[in-house]
Image 1 (cartoon, rainbow, N blue to C red):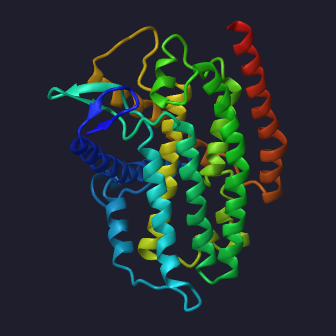
Image 2 (tube, helix red, strand yellow; image 1 turned 120 degrees about the horizontal axis):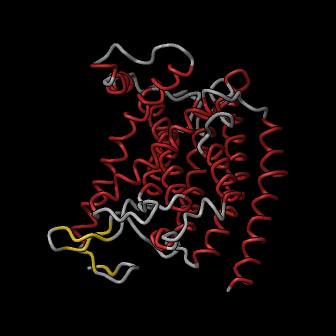
Image 3 (cartoon, rainbow, N blue to C red; image 1 turned 90 degrees about the horizontal axis):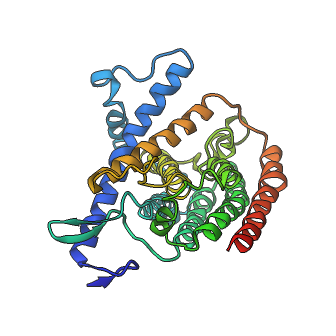
Length: 340
């Protein structure tokens, strides 16, 4: 038996079931997001998305997974074998571990047993998130370095620099929320938004976190690690088959993680506006609907904005986002002290 941070006991077998469910949901929802992105971008660009495999092209991701899984396992002769295989695994595991932090609801009684609708609710939620983000850095660096290719290593260096630069602004954007809520628990932050979602008083923090999330997930217009004309394919240039698809899955899963954290921290999590209190089983669907809107925004931006130059990327992060996040934290701290 383990004691959770909200003061109730959760049997060990419940935690095992929750871990299995998290993996199943994460790996099950990713193909749907991929199909949705390709179809939506097709509509934005006045063309069709996948429409050949299965009804409405819905089985296209399954066909591609089978294609990549059956490809020959090839690696360059100059690569470091163990690390070359380990790097994509690190990216997948860190993304799933971060996804476990997203709360899809409060504690509910299921067959008489209290179960939290989240993987884990630690008392240091944002620190937990950034800790696994720091470990994900090694998935990028090891992937580029162990490939034995200068192009891959250069892509890894740029990706790591981008990750570190925007993680600073992203962390500071959450400081204002933590000051206002008075807790580091993500479920506690959701409960603190019962009067007003934090997207209103922390609007600048919301913008900074969301923009930094684009850079953290290597999404357009910040997809510099995949700048084809400059770096061939970034840190995963030498990967094919399951290694390449693992990196792609990690990227899309990180998009879901950022969407889930934005939903939790700024959009009230499972809370509905106007004082509406639905049954507990509705909570996960509310969170998924809000995440769906954020994912749609990610796709919309990708199909709209061109890729930035690398110097523009770094300048924007250090000269604009970082000062704005710092100012937002300072103003919030002053207002919290004055009003309390």
